[in-house]
Length: 238
Image (cartoon, rainbow, N blue to C red; front, side, top):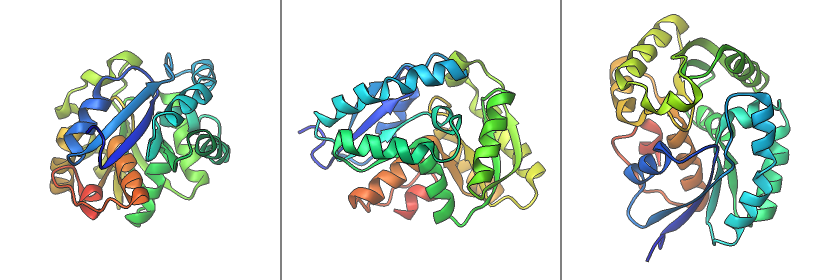
């Protein structure tokens, strides 16, 4: 039976490219993905607001699908609205879905705390204005961006970034951060899964990625304690 161990609801920020593929590579047998999308059109304020307006309809649909946990994907949508918006959003999601919930940036911060990491080396595909908002948002929550290296891809091309480029960007970010405690690689459509273990092994720091932090928080919430190897320290911590 589909999702006999757990059904994870997911509100994708945009089209499903890497999200579903990465999900099923990582999760144990018997865990199913139930996904909808709010179709954000780009890394722009008007696009964020338009996509956030779709959240209620998406959450109501997941509420009909017996999800055990619900993830709202897309850190830019939330952090762009400033500190405090995430709490309002999570209350709304939990009321509409009847399930425990998280959103991307909250899951990442929960992971930082469990790793005792406050100083971050960041790698992402985002433009400068979005990175400035993310840095300010994390600072408001007590996290310091020690360095930030952006691959500068377009919104629709982040999924075809090279894992070699991501690895080299992480190497540079760790070097520039000086005394970083974790490598943060956000973005739901960034091909980081294949290189998480290489980065952790070579640079000695845990990697907090979009998919691993969300699954880590979700599995903790529903009591799934199966250790998952091959995708970084967070998954092994379960």
